[in-house]
Image 1 (spheres, rainbow, N blue to C red):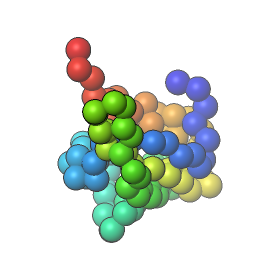
Image 2: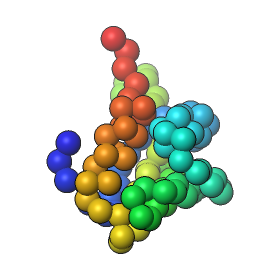
Image 3: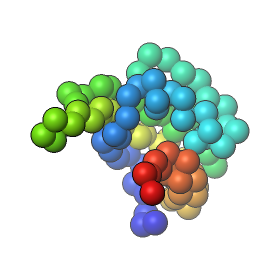
Image 4: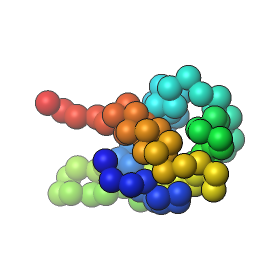
Length: 100
């Protein structure tokens, strides 16, 4: 995985209910504080992470409709690059869904 910036955005192909079901496992036992459309995760190194999400219009491909969330990741300034990378590697592995 390349360097993880302190702030970045992604599009996730899931519903909010699915996202909320996966999130506790993705944070690997860290404290998780949930509010409507956002989460705070601590500790990550000497800081934490705020995640904000909002539903987008579904992606339509022919007759298929795929749910989408816009997700913003905001690491605290004092979270070192190596800690961001370590956290996101685990987070991404947990959130991966495949049909193979």
